[in-house]
Amino acid sequence: MRLIEIIPSLWEQKKNKEAEAYRNTVFTFLLLSFVIVSVFLSALLLLMGKKREFDERYTYGLVLCTMLTAITIIENFGNYRVRIDRGFTYISIVMLLELLPIIGGIWLVPIIGYYAIYITSLCSVSLGIVLYLRKAYQDIKFEIDGRLLKEIIKSGMPLLINGLIWTV
Image (cartoon, rainbow, N blue to C red; front, side, top):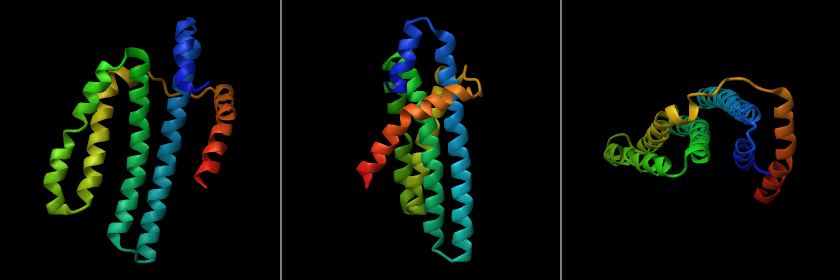
């Protein structure tokens, strides 16, 4: 059973503490792992870019991609959380509002080039995080239940392996 299905079923069974533990553990793990990986990859890319003298646009583009990936995962968590707890109406409004930075991106492309696409994406996803703050992230506690995390990783490992097999 996927995590997006587990938490609502726990709420329905009135197992609120267990559902909160799942939510807090998953969010904290995602946040920590993506921040650590993004910082590590960004630093590595910047060092490699300086030592090997790669084109700086290539280096900065890859750094922006790592940041965009991490921020998108956090925004998707908020999206799923609001979808589970409150339905689709608010998500639809947020998704429409996330399209607004495209106007600025189109205006910026002639000025700063392809960086405008990255900046537009970062602005769009950041706007989503801000709009989900009150409804999705307000009651999250930064804590990890080791036993629960081990169980989640163990149950998700076959999906990870299957995904890796099909991408190769």
